[in-house]
Image (tube, rainbow, N blue to C red):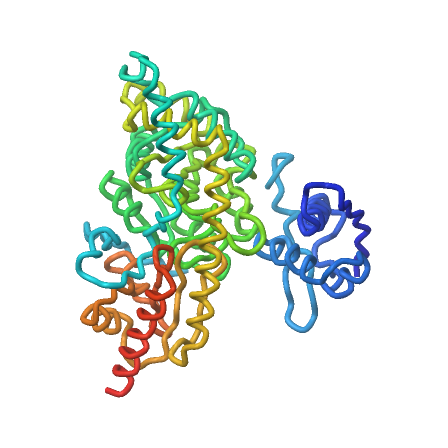
Length: 482
């Protein structure tokens, strides 16, 4: 067992759990804690450091989530095998059925509000706490000065002041390494994906997880990409299937896969990076759509932050953290693709209004965004904990997963009927729930196992949660009785 000589410092602003996390993480990465080496139990380490056990548990849980540790039942915690995957001085079968795009978009909360009393949408935010006063203030300040340049065409890639603010935020919050010159601002992820395919040029084969974010799949399919789907295990998309399909591009959501909620551990991430490095022209699209909202430990670092060879294209959005209506997403291009962008697509005008970009830049630079984000994390965590506790009391709930992040949960149901039938009967009772299979690409085999509902809670208050769960309980029992 490795004895951890961690020198904790209460005077630092860094929390104690983060000091433990940083120590163990760096020692595993440097090989000072070798692969397979056992670590002290949380009880023993807490006693050794004379701190609470919960503090040590929090650090271990974060290391487990990121793949630095493995938990072996009845045995303890062990350092994961990652050393052989470090490369470049920094980081190192049956064919699947071809899927078809059915051209349909899932119901958004906005489109179904008129039809249902309660909507368990994973897309809807809670806007009751939005800092309207701050946004109005920044808008007034921007328009208070007669500045003719405000109404002139802006920079094609987006306003420099906004790109600088986003770069600073991404570096500190997500570990993304990029310069403002590498960033492109666009009106939504779909637009950025369409632009990216034009930058890349030619017909590309793209591998995606299944189930997945269907709008991204549809966008890439409509751009003429040859789409292939990979299965997933507990660590995310399977690299052996990626190798079998031999795509040019892998599209993945490693920090919080939608809709399953899987967090890809470090070893699988490094396997992906190693795959991308094997041949020039391979790229990984990292969709980091809601990484801000993680309720246990700290946000999972980006895959792009481990990329030393320019193979990761990082895409993010403010749709979850601020509002989908502002239509601001961003894409960080590797240097090689940046040159192609300027050569082939640099003449496109920006799709986000200049004044909107300037307001958002001020919102970020003046600290409003950070304060808003911290507040919303507390609000969504409280909703998450309440919703989870209510579901755990239900006898019809067999298993809950995808928790501790995002704004939805996956719920396996004890019933002989399909999830689609439950969803239909819930609709008849004024409740919109979602079948996990709605996020599976059309034409692919349905998953085996218990019926699984996807239930979002971000926009719901406690009364709506309780009423919605009560209706689902009645629907499931009616199904079982029949």
